[in-house]
Image (cartoon, rainbow, N blue to C red):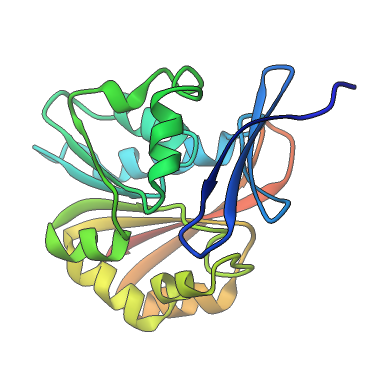
Length: 221
């Protein structure tokens, strides 16, 4: 098997380092040696966009916020489920992730950042969420979800005040979709307490195989 090739390095917001690796057509971004995102398996990222799109239904002029660009797969799937009148804002804290998605990684998800419906904010999703509300859908794919965080400050997205902020930022009947590395009953309880009705969906990372992830679909009451 070929060794991994390092294509680029960039500072991470928490003081660590993003490292972009490539091997035999596969791209991986790691932080402190831990795999953060990979082009090998992205089924659950695409599924969260499909669930959000289905929950939106026929909302006119939908406004969607995606927290976390990743490798662009969630954004691409979201765009495929929306009409020409949609507006999608991607909040990504790491400028390098955006830059790599425009250049060496652009082909992976079909260059979604070039879609005229998309605007990118190099900013914390919490700030964008509050400053440009209301949203019809908010998708959060930040870190590993509510638990097993690699960046401690991300916990405030998923704690009770963070969920209250998301609830307040949504339009009536708006939907919050959260990617998680696994099930989390305490997180479900926090969502309910924040004023959401909740469905959980176990989804494989790959097409019918791979690691089982959990998607929380929370509708604003």
